[in-house]
Amino acid sequence: MGPVLVLFFFLSKLFLEGSRKSLFSFSLFLSTIIATLVNPFFWRVWVEVLRHATRGLENSIAEWVPTIFPHSLFVIIFAVVISLFYTVKYLKSHKTSAFEILTIIFFAILALKARRNLPIFYLSIIALFPMDLPKLNRILEHPQIKITTCSIIVFLIVLSTPGNIYKVVNFSTNWGVYCETGYVRLPCKATEFAKDFRGNIFNMYEWGGFLRLEDTKFQSFY
Image (cartoon, rainbow, N blue to C red; front, side, top):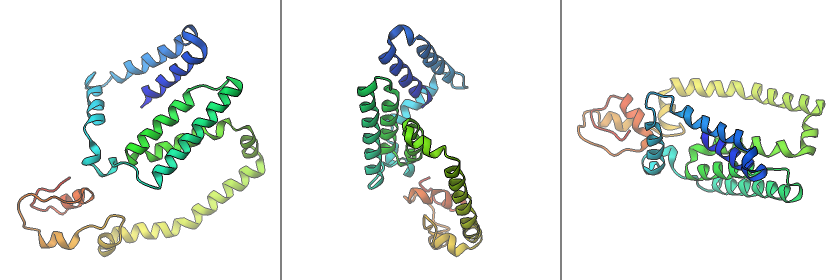
């Protein structure tokens, strides 16, 4: 991901300043490519990247499934709004670059392809959107706003901590809660019934680690 962002930086400099002034950014991009080769697998690390990109992991691993509604709609809206913002700014002043547009589109594509990339996309919004809004920056820099914001965050943390600690302890110690009311309901009773079953079984991907932990005799999808 790092080399891709540096490539966007180079292309942005090339677009705005021409080939001569973009030599430094090109050397930076080349350095990041060379740096990726400093690993036990050398160039084969790029083979692994290609394998991940073409293997169709969305059909075998839960966290790689595509983002669904409504998050997919949020991703598209944010990407379009931010891209239009920087496009209009460039048309007005010619002071912005293509880096922001390329970056937000890149992270939007990643987020739409796999829901595991949603946090990265939302973090990219925080990094790209507010920093170029002078009015918003002036508001956020006001001491009273900073104090109020920090106070609200601390208050919410203090308010939610006891309840969250209770949930974590209860979930970790109460076997019934662990099996029946967790984010992923686990087949506790089924494993007791099929403890001595031998052969292959096609289970939900989220159950794989649990079935291995239960030391079942059958081969599970993990």
